[in-house]
Each structure stands twice: as structure tokens, then as C-alpha cells.
Length: 64
Image 1 (cartoon, helix red, strand yellow):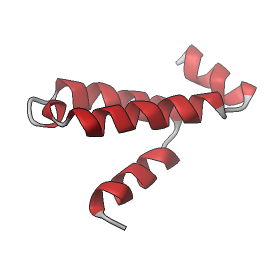
Image 2 (cartoon, one colour):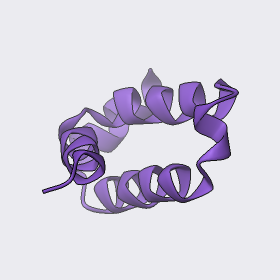
Image 3 (tube, one colour):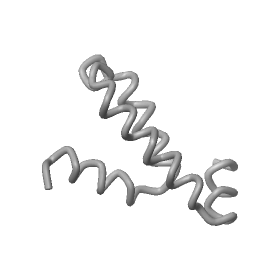
């Protein structure tokens, strides 16, 4: 598995709020924001995790 795949696999395991914060930090980074494909992958994984989240996880995500 490549290092990029490793990073995405680890990202997938983060709590939803941590994923969101990581995406925001990536967008604000002058270097990381240039990697449009990586950012798109993060957003796609976050959307998948959000779609598969339990009601309790979504409640925590929205109230924080």
C-alpha cells in the first residue's frame, strides 16, 4: 500500500469532526491545498463515513 493510501486509510478511521477539521486545515495549507486529488479523496471519504454513520455519531457531529 502506498503512503497516500495509508494516509487515506488512517483518515477513514478518524471521528467525523476530526475528519472535517483535517479537511479544513488541508484547504488552508498553501502546499496541501494544491493537491486537488488528495483533497477530493478526503472529502469523498468524509461523505462516505457521514453516510454510514449512526444516528448517535451524526448527532455528536452536528452538536459540536
